[in-house]
Image 1 (cartoon, rainbow, N blue to C red):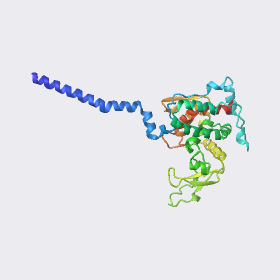
Image 2: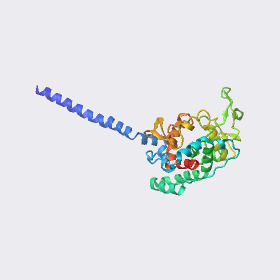
Image 3: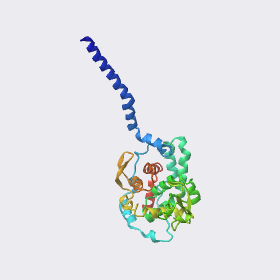
Image 4: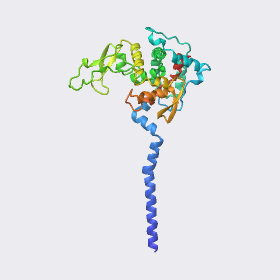
Length: 303
């Protein structure tokens, strides 16, 4: 009987050792993957290389703290006014300056590592250069300037892409293709038609080697074209679904949140509506808006 007991004891010990090894080899790595999934995915997709990836995802703000007591009435007036859409040469005069570059730079120095400083300054240069166009388009189209600027930064690498420098195209908008043009096996420039705001099409590889992108005389036409695109049927549902200053539920959570400020809801909506195929497009846009406090610019238009 004693040998049998020893045999049972040995089996139990072996089972215990096996379970412990399995815990080390399988369970713990699985736990670590789940625990740090966002960080791992960020590294694999290049998100962590962006100068904005500094764990700011819990810093969601809607702007209510700067809006003041009259904001509700001003917001209603903003969404009721569509007069600028029909003016040939509208202009925008900023009444308040909630977004101040010097303050943003000071905040970034406290949050970002030294290796991100030069990239951060490029991002701020882009905002400084194009914020007037984004604010004008927001007043005309009701598309948040923060979202427009974030898309411009992301699509052009803060204005440094070939498409932006040579084509003044800040939003990756393609020329319209003739239906069925690939079926004949011959592709030429006549198969593509630019929008009336554009002056030409330029070939660049995106989804396909034959992709053609619109070329504009200046960045102003590119920002106007972007507004017109987002007022089209595919995207316009967001205009009154996600109004400035609100907090909304989204179908796909972002950074673990399903109840997010309007600008994050816009970013999720753009991705869901097919603006871009990149997996973390919404996350990247949201990080840019948060890190550079672009949501403050939206309030300069309304208040």
